[in-house]
Length: 420
Image 1 (cartoon, one colour):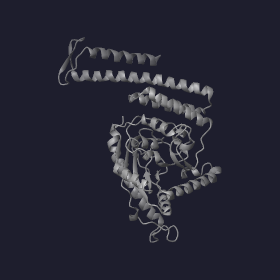
Image 2 (cartoon, helix red, strand yellow):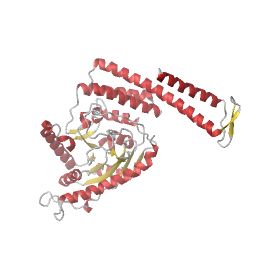
Image 3 (spheres, helix red, strand yellow):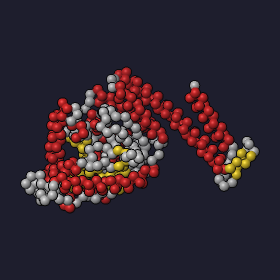
Image 4 (cartoon, one colour):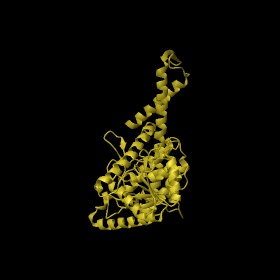
């Protein structure tokens, strides 16, 4: 009853203020305005503040009403689905909150509600299918495009959350250079920071209109979270993935450690075959996880694992094909931010926001400037024993991380002020 009374007061106040302001013409702030109903002069600054307050109250009421409708519709959809399908209870709650968050952002952004409700309905159907029969990802998973196009589903879903007009892509000349190198049979390794589960989809949304096929063919090194989580699975099924168990998760649970290690060896073998064949573009996050905010809430590029970068360098040496290493900075966290907790259980809570995103492709790293320690006698070729292998790989890792972090800060400085 208290909430109803407060809502009624807000509605009355907004309506009354609107009525009074409608009776009064707009005027410059520097003069006084005569309020017809009161017959007294009122400073225009106050009138404009009242006008803004009325508009804000009206907007808030619209959003509140839309939220109630959206939440009710999604709850009803979910209830009907649960009558015919079994969904783990925690996932039912996650689906409702995630889908409600998504549709409310579409509403706030002025998007086509019918279009994105249809996309959401299709996604829900795929989530239910994977809940009933979880998809088993091979070490190398190729995007499923038929009979159902999972790539298109993921991109269409992400497109609704990306403010394309405010988004940025820097270093497109470098991306064009990569495309030429790949076409010539060379390999390209993108060494990127990682901020959102939706990074592959956002990558496509930004690049597909201007570089068709580039993002679509890119292979992403993916951890086990995106291949085992029911909500993430349909999106992952639409991407080319090298599916690994990250070092953070290999040891847990202990009884699966040997299985996970065998799986990772199969992934390394497959990746070596791909690099030897050539013409590959592989995206990897050397940090092994998503960036997180610091103590004051600012997102920073997580530290890179020097062993991860060294592994790609060694594999490229063994492939005997030209392999080009490019730093890539990604600003994507506002759209689908990671949870504060690192390494929580599968099935994390998700929120989404309509926001701009950005990419910055830096120039190719000249590896000849960075000596490489010897793994065995004279391998890699021209390796050195004059300095420790650990020190040499740290030098390269710090250099690449520094480029990614610097370019990320520049993107952040431009885009952060645009985020509501």
